[in-house]
Length: 140
Figure 1: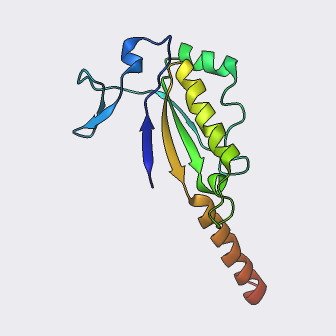
Figure 2: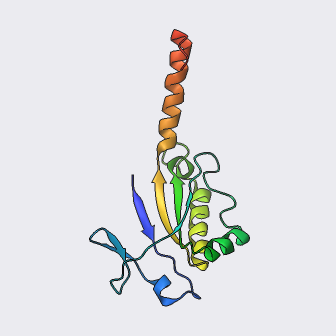
Figure 3: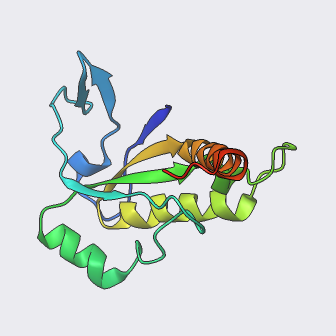
């Protein structure tokens, strides 16, 4: 699993929110050496369109800030980015993820972009289950 941390940056944010983050001794720290603590939500959608279409709902974003949330773990599905295997990428999906990161930054929300490949595994499991049911009559 590949995890990329993107720091939220916005023109109206406080300096400590604009800070570039790095990893020091297994901690996320800002440029002043302060350990940063994050509170937030998990937004992972493992089916088409592979993102929460309400993630940028302004009412929700304002509530997240009121609750003190400053982070979103955003699932990025490999099948959303590359729905077919012939090196063709879904530029629309990638643009949507980029837009989500930028819009969350406006609300001072950092994004942990979490790449998922689980949908290939799910397809494999369905295929094996179909074979078992078809040839053995065995149903789990």
